[in-house]
Each structure stands twice: as structure tokens, then as C-alpha cells.
Image (cartoon, rainbow, N blue to C red; front, side):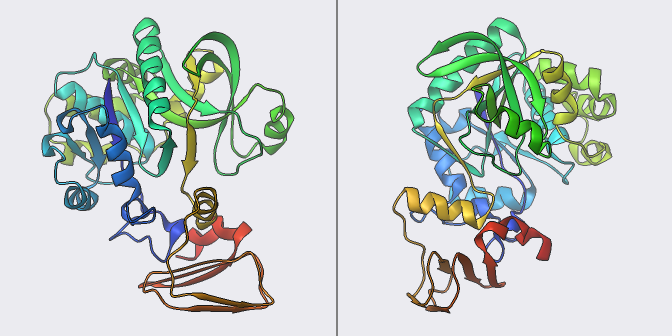
Length: 340
């Protein structure tokens, strides 16, 4: 199994601290460590540096190497420009083919998530490897939500396949788009609904075959890259697209598998999600002190350790950073990216 950390994006919803020069995945938000470092250290409990791969852009690669000098540069795949997650995942497959490991399963680790406990992550990876070798199918992950979470897609569990160490394997019965709120609500308490957390697992050869079948315009250039042509010339020619352009077809046809994983998955997409994680883990946000009058339930963080005073506001997020100051209601923190 080849673990690949997918490390891209700017994280505009976590402005003003997250920026193109220092995206959220590299900010020391959790006990002085970044999401990138946390995910790297998790994988290092099982894998050697030469066994871990990273895909990102050239600027973020420099930041990653500064934070973790033991990264093997040969294992860093550079996206010349953003073509969205579909071509990005395809590039992983093409680059692994180029390195001669097209028949080895890879496991995708999105950098802006935290997974605990680590052993449960490895149990899930072991299950994904077993099922992947046995079936050759596209494998992904999910967990049973206790509430509707916006901004993510959902899957419905189909036929049960097996369970080991808490990792439960099912055929995928259906895919539900994040915007289909009525259908999500319908299945919320059915025992069939899973929030889709990705964790793509497949061999590079099999994924490239799917890309050739469903997105031949991607495949043409990815195949050229796999055969040794210049990634800086070929990759920008690929049309932008999402991985769902392929995987939704598989989900709808019953040709994919989902592992209901036993580990806790926390996605850091907004300041509200960070506050929730802080509360659950008894972490205090950094600031120079907070004074509140007729106020409660506020989340205040200051990059320069300034004191923050709030009078007459409840459930507000206040973030002070080099690039600006954010003040917003907690339930609107998902809109932050729209003002950057």
C-alpha cells in the first residue's frame, strides 16, 4: 500500500490566517503543529519516508520540505497548475505508473483532515488493501453522520461484504449530491447513510483504465506523462474536472465499494470546524486575552497575540492576522471564502 498525501488548495474559508503564501494545512493550529505535520507523523508510525508520497504545487512543496526535511524529494509530485481534484488524482496514478508501481494500491490522504486514533486508520488501510486486491474496484470511505453536514457528499450503503477491526465494507448502493438536502434528510436516520470522506484506494493501472473509459481527454495527457513526457507541458492541457465525474458513474452502477471507517474524521474547512475541534480536545485558541460584556459563545484567535474585547455579541468568530481581521457569525463561517 502506497500512502499519498494530497496537499493542495489555499483554504480561503480560513482567511485571514490562511493565504496563498501560507495555506491552512501549514498553519500551526493544533498544539503548535500543522495539519500537514500531523498527517505526516501519523503515516510515519508505519511507513518510512521513502514509502510516503506527496502531491502538491511547487510553492507548497517548499513549505512542506521546510516543515519536514525528511521528505524524499523524488516522492513529491508537482502539479504545474490547478486542474481540480479529478486530474490531480489522475496525476498521482500517472506518476506512480512512471515510477513502475502501477500494480501497487495507493491510499489517498487529504491533508486538511485529522483522523484518530491512528491504529484505526491503519486498520482501514489494511482492509482497503485486502478488498482492493480481491476486487480491483474503486474503494472510498465514509462514516455514519448524526446530523446533516453541509459541503460534503453522501453515499448509501448497499450489500454488506465483511468487517474486521471495526472497519465495515459495503457495496455502494447510491450517491447523493451535497445539494440534495431532501434526500440526505430522508436517509439520515435510516442506518444506510454515510458521509463521504473519500480516501480513494485503487491501483494506478486500474484508475488510469477508468479515466480512459470515462474521461479520455484527461487520459490522453496523463498517459503521456506516465510514458515520460513533460508534466509541465502535458498537465495544463487537461480540462478541469472533479473525480466525481468518474466515481458517481461507478456508484450509480454498483461498481464501487465503501469502507465505513472506525476512526474519527475531522475536516478543517471553516473556523467553526476548528472551534469544534478545540472544544472536543480542550485546546484554547491563541490570543492576548478576551474580555466579554453581555457576550457569550464567541471564538477569538489572534495571530499577534492581541487582546480582544467583545460587547453585546454572541456566537461570533473573531480572527486577527497579518492580512486582516475577520468578524462573522459562527453559522456563516462557510461564507468567508466569498469575501477574500
